[in-house]
Length: 396
Image (cartoon, rainbow, N blue to C red; front, side, top):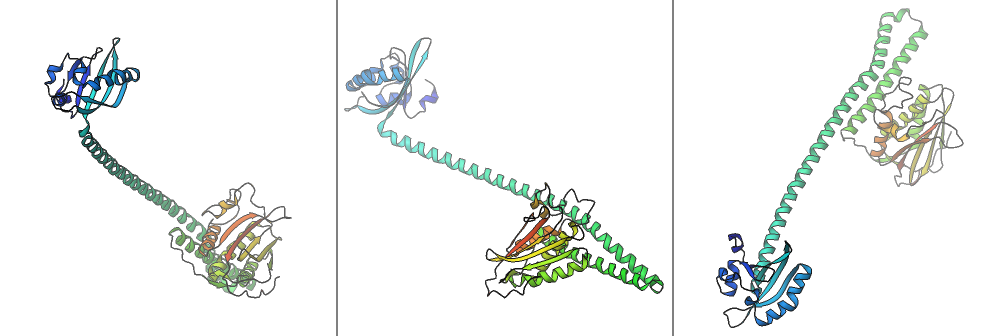
């Protein structure tokens, strides 16, 4: 028998079809107190006590023939000791060339606990090694995800910067060119121009300066939102007052539209920051006026809803068609049907979404409510400040 089997701490024995020993290792010789080589050719029965022989012939060997294997059969070995040695036997049958032979592993019962302890220790060591390897795999996966996230973030930042620079250069060029050109004209020809022309030029300069101011405010919010540095105050504010002020300003800029403000009774104070609420309302009004035909009415409603205040801006424009309304709030998004026909940077509604969210509210876009057959509604909601409800000062 090979030296490798001699190192096995249990007895190993091979039997031919007649159950005669064809090989035995050193541990088996130790168990029975004989030289392993002297066992070759002996019947396996000679190793067993008389009761064990009967049990082997009547139960163990028939089970081995039927199933091809047995596990932990209890037998006793005949040795030089006064008492037989109790052992556990595991055996397998192998068939070759029409004949069967059998390989048995025989373990002294009192050594079994040591084997099990060694096996448990080896199993625990294997589990610990696998756990350590899994931790390394998990750490590598986490590092990979982190690097991928950083790469995606950097790629997103580069794309944002490219678009941002393009938008700024394009959107600021027009008002700057207008202001500079008309200022130069007034500077060189003021004395020769008709007073009405001068007034018109001054009005255009003021409009373009206001446009540039509003764009600058939106770009400031945009840059802070993209850098996750947008900080908004939270204090009780009277929304109807802010809405009316914004409507009055937009009415001057859009004389071709009618504006109607409807304020529900018992308006509570809302939580937010008045400067940013004003910016949201101005953006929504400007958006409605931009996409609504001249001569139509832009309706603004303010009402108490869901423990807060809801503001809705409803226009009579073309509506959304097949496009998803939520896409309009994405930064730099512009509907395919208006690109090249309507001015805009595609940041106003994104700014509205970010500001409303920072104030703890929500914003939405939907088709104009029935019975309107076209048009759009843009609205936002801010939470109640939980103060005493101020008396609404009426509607128009």
